[in-house]
Length: 178
Image 1 (tube, one colour):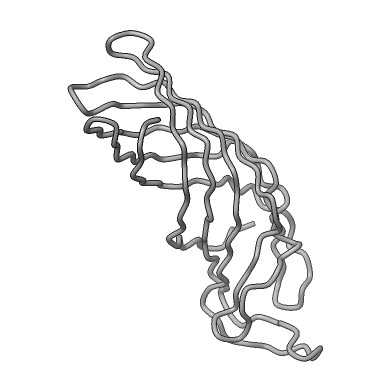
Image 2: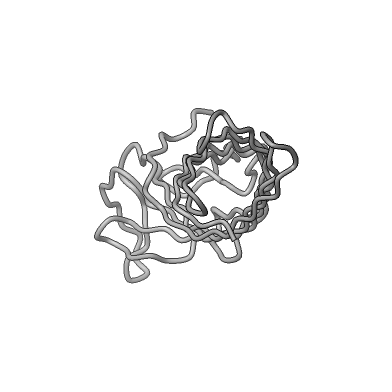
């Protein structure tokens, strides 16, 4: 089965970070945060949707999705030189509400019970640039959990099966070490 094309949308989040020095060059970091993640799936044709309880075909290039999650991200970082660290670790996250979808101008944000991510976990790697107690962090996160809750249907609403989709994100953020 061919999976639909994914187009990433810009999300946002908040995070708290604590750095614990282990050696002069290695730190243990703990990040606790909240994200609103957004993505979009290419429709590959008209969609069958209910408008006023009436099945209607609409032409739409992408279906937009968003969900909110909390996460815990412990990492080890290594000082490459003063103010720049490379880091890697694991993350665990939980989406605490149903995923929502939007159909362009046809339908505003609504719950999507067929596309839900509860728990996720994976790997994270990135770079952190810091000056005094302020930092700029950029990282890539790759989910290891198979998101079996993601179901693909055709234009008539018939199931085409479950995907083997893994979540992955490119993140960037400003912060303050406390």
